Length: 333
Image (tube, rainbow, N blue to C red; front, top):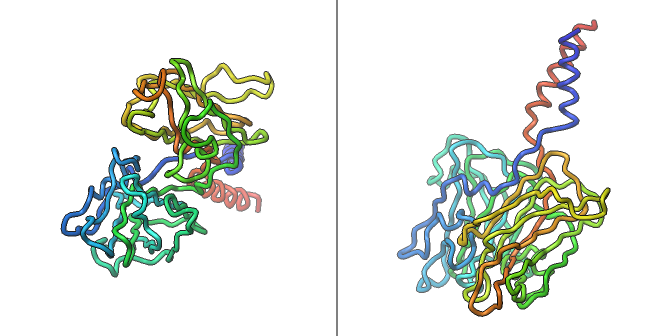
């Protein structure tokens, strides 16, 4: 029967879900925050994709001492949130949040009413993660807004308040790269946006950074946060992304990305990979570094290079398949 074949196709779709994008949901929302007498930056600074001094940030004034504060990201529609990452700002790496509370907005509620929020949890930031703190929630939260609040903090500055629809724990890798001038290669994979790797002068030639998963694995996406530092490091003008071809025992000539004319002010590069994509190694090739006065022939720096597992789409196809199974059972009676 044709309808039976359709049911079987729907059931098969459950075993092979489509993949969603790995992306920072905060960028698609609007940011709001408490207004001190003269706040530094603006709430939008926590969702602009840059935690650097040259990018946006949000904090209380230097004159205020210990402060209570809050900010939140609000979307037009309900979103699924699984991971939350707080990133300090290089504007002042000593002024960091040490403890905070997370909240989700109740359905159809006024976000400016404190009673409209349900507490997710209280969090104390470990010393080792004080500049970049990742929280993976035990289950998805469906909400239109997420809020962070804190009490009696030392005038903290927030670089980014990132919200994601999946577990954003990076896949475990080892790393190799062009010789470094500042920092070590492991500083690019330690999960801390305060630390970074900076290459030595490339003398106009290409530079690279390579991540090795240790075995063939499925990868859903990657993120690179380039480093900008005055006369030393700038975002590359052009770069490519390659994957290891196990059959050829060499890097694939089919590039995952070939980027030219990359904006000098855009630090973060995201790449979603095709469904079912597997590899053992992924490599960044900096083909055109931007020249800097203090580094011969240009250089590049990286705060973060991370690979992520695939993100399943919401279970729409699963629900259709379950409905089809019920129809199939009823017809067989």
